[in-house]
Length: 414
Image (spheres, rainbow, N blue to C red):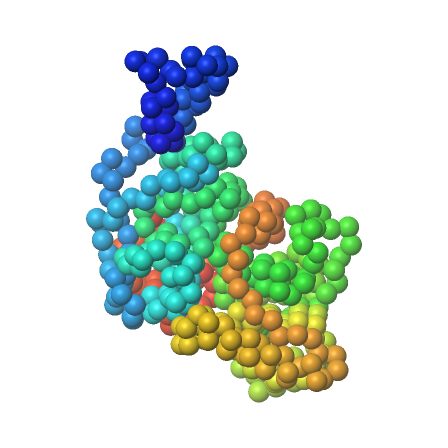
């Protein structure tokens, strides 16, 4: 915007616009453009009140300066507050965030090769992790939709290659936030979007649970599909159970016996104890399945143990990022193609077997709107394992690293 003003200033002779000498209509247009630039700069710097903007320009947060174990994570109250760079962005004061297994993995260097390529910058550290949040809009660009106002409480999600939200302030594009569902508290809402979008993309984008064109409107006919969710008691699993049930699917879930009541309450029609010695036999006896969603980390090779027929086996534990980290970008992708062919060779030779697919978290506006609609209808709940204060982030990270959670780990910044 400043460069446009500079260009206007050069179009003068002895204090009079050059354009005035040749075309009055163009002069009027350029004056209007100049005024719009001034207005734009003012609007991007408009706050609800003087106290809404952090004048100190520094914030608290947790970040790393090198990859390694959790002891690489350090607290700082001297982190520069991010700035809006595009008209569609907003500056958000964080109220609550969740801690996900991907955060712990990124601290350890998982996916660093590909994520650094996606970041398109030579500056890798310091790195802040954290993928989903609830917060208040305190700055907005002129291109932000009118339904997102200053002071609104919103929930949002951050792409894995972007700077995270385990800090006091974050800048995010308005396409990846919406107003927080009124049915959810800040704590509950902060734990939904990363896991919810992971489950949504696995079921819809990879698993073909439903027609993508109708995921945002009421279905006229139920899918009546059969979905098996492996590892259903964790963050992604609990979201997957509710999404599949929302699509009128018959839901089979695997978990420890102490999670049976919780999963039944979320909508699972049958819960199979994975610690039972007849675990695989029970999976077989309840088949066939249209979709098998691996949220337990079994990986592609587990498909060889499944004897019943299925349409799609979708796993979130693919070797894609690990292969690129190990072999480099080009050789790693060649290895990925070979791995996917090998995984499917185990199933295509058997009649009635579908394809092995790799599922991923996808930060997509349509998915956020789908989850918001479910929440607004009272059909989406966030199962909370534990809530920690922001100063106790190390305990929260350790809890996630230890695993065997019953829901989400949340950090409260309010």
